[in-house]
Image 1 (cartoon, rainbow, N blue to C red):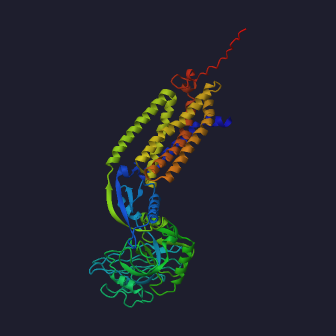
Image 2: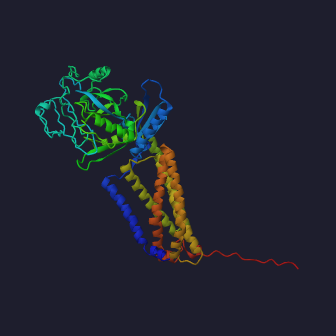
Image 3: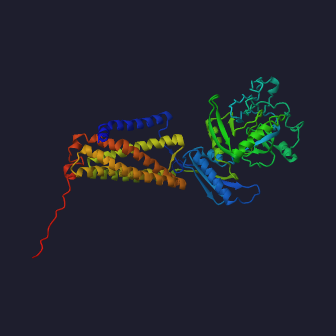
Amino acid sequence: MASSTSSQSKPGRVLLALLALILAMGAAMLLQQSFVPKFGLDLAGGTTVTLSPQTETGAAPTEESLDLAVNIIRERVNGSGISDAEVAKSGDNIIISVPGAGSDEVVKRLGTTAELRFRQVLAWAPAAIPPGALPTAPATPAPSGSGGATPAPSTSAKPGATAEPAPSGTPAGRALSSALTAPTPAPSPSAEKSGEATPSPGTPAPSGQPSAPAEQDPLAGVDMTGIDPAVAEQFKKLDCAKNAGQGTQDNPDKQYAACSDDGTARYILDKAAVKGTEVSGATSGVDSTTGEWIVSVNFKSKGASQFATITGQITSAPEPRNQLAMVLDGVVISAPTIEEPIPGGQARISGSFTQVTAEALANQLKFGALPLKFVQSSIEEVSSTLGADQLHGGLLAGGIGLILVVLYCLFYYRGLGLVAVASLAVATILTYQAVVILGHNANFRLSLPHIIGLVVSIGITADSFIVYFERMRDEMKEGRRSLRVAVEVAWVRARRTILIADAVMFIAAIVLYFLAVGGVAGFAFAMGLTTLIDIVVVFLFTKPFVAALARSPFFAKGHKLSGLDAERMSRETPAVRTTIPQEG
């Protein structure tokens, strides 16, 4: 009884805790400068892209490969947040619908093959560049070992400018000479003694790598040992300035001629030493030493062994065969020099990443490679006009339902009905704040199914405090308890019922969310979110607010408008036993 009295005497502290929670969520919205929820495809419009599969043989794809592709793309969508994106199979095609502006770029990234290959570099040459074109080679991200080396700064030349030497973090720690900074620079990786593969993008080719003009034989003077002549011919014909080959599905069991992702260099690469299927996970983050964004790649046991083997084999090879190229979607994103074996099953990709590009690459690698190559067969912009009309009708229906609930509570519970109205208001505030914060941090987008789930939650919240009110009235009808005591005793009984009911609802929402897709999953998410908010409101507002009101004379003395007056709370008339006389 002491605990009940203690909790009864300090309801203000609980209400202050709720106020602090609301203020904290409001401060988060203010700091993020986000005050309006994000809307889904049906309310904000977006892009719908149809992806058509292509196989190497030209035959129709199998159902298993299409189902696998749909699952992988759906995992990528979920990995980027609760974005209300939809992935569906239509015949042999896959349809991706992503809400919001700029969604076509998201769709393109979701539909790429995104399989990483680690291949040894067999030959290297600058890309064939038309006369007079002097492109600026941007720095490219590059892998490093687990030690955390920093990539060297790059140099570039622009039309009409004079290329000047720039310091480069080479293993010897020396700066590049002016003779190496040619007007047409090409990336050439470098590494540090720590055993990390760290590139030096934008620097010219080291000794042994040709820098002949495009019209000359790019393989002149190159060691052709072990190079497939057919791949060498493909290498000579590569025009990286026109098409770097992004999205090409390369065969990991054959040698491959590829361009760098910036189109300034071309490579002849050996068979894949480590395939993307051996990647167990990838994460993005900020290097604590350099402050740059990096992507950490973890290998499975077999992949870790293969990565350690290839890095150990090529350390003693002559340039450029001591370079290990990373091929993603058919292009070389980096080809660093390897000076020491890199064991442990971990590699880091560092370089000119931003937060967006680092997170995008990590998600692509983490959620695996698509089993098929896809081409975009159609792109359509989706209008939000129809969804806006449906939203107007849905909000109107929800408003009418809310008004009816409020009128019923005021009519039946009178003064206590104000507690119900206030509880609904607090639940609305918390729900709105949660939707806005989730939209900013988890890409949660409000769609029609979500709104339906939020409207249905009005009944869930109303059920909770109705259970509590009825328990409290039952305690007072017994005539042995005052209002302040009835508030505490009824709460002990009511909270068990409330928690059980909310637990059942939350479990149903979780099961429905993971088993369903699209709009049904959105409805389940909204229902689960509002169920949690209902628990917060009942525990942190409804109960302590009633306890605070129980101290006021209006409720404690049972005013006629309080809903707890003596007439309504009077003891029920006991049953009267009657005796029927027997004849005779």
